[in-house]
Length: 297
Image 1 (cartoon, rainbow, N blue to C red):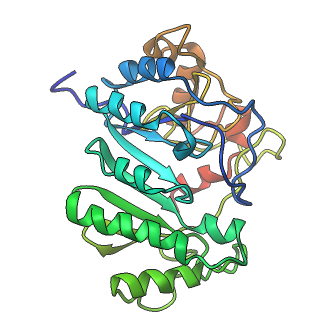
Image 2 (image 1 turned 90 degrees about the vertical axis):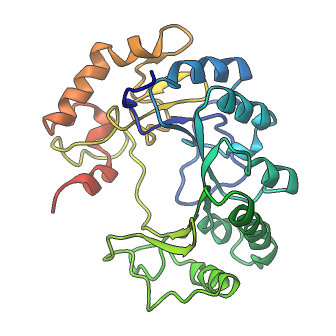
């Protein structure tokens, strides 16, 4: 659709719901563990390419575990769809680091806070060295690539006790940057600090993932689901947002219907209409803490 604005800023595609870690801030997936097939991925990309600026290899799971990641990247490149990848970085071996420099990638996020959450007594130097080397090569060969170091709960008394400030010190030393004063994630609304060129530190607080088993928080609110983004689970289920980790709001299966038909369905349109009217009509949305971040203060 050249010349037309894209409908979504991103489409989240869960190419794997399998993860090599089990972080305390990321609930375990209850669904059957699965890797997305290349055939299904090709179908998804063909349908989302006209609708989005980029696809995000993220919902649940770790994308670097997928053995066909190279093929997936090539499909996106052929369809001229940019990739936004979120990874814990633990599996960043040399061949994968080279792959992430592919021109198809627009942004790579590393969730550094996952390391100490899983390995509280380990030295992070080897882990960080792989990420630092990748970042330095990207700064040289892919200056257009955005890289985010995600580091949550820095000096946040409400967050879990972590060694993330140790990570912060190592980033500071490697890139010769001073982080002025204590980073208070609970107060500072600008949660990104430029390290160098397009390399950034991103910090935030943890949140409770929505679940139908949690109490209702309210029925008034709005969300960017179905307006700025949607999600596709590993089995092809279309969901309205990236926090529907168990597919509690299935809008349809992309193997059975076109994506446009799914988005035009009564359920999808009712959800979208509700958000515009500040009404939360789905059970999961009524139990979503993250929606509070979109409310005006």
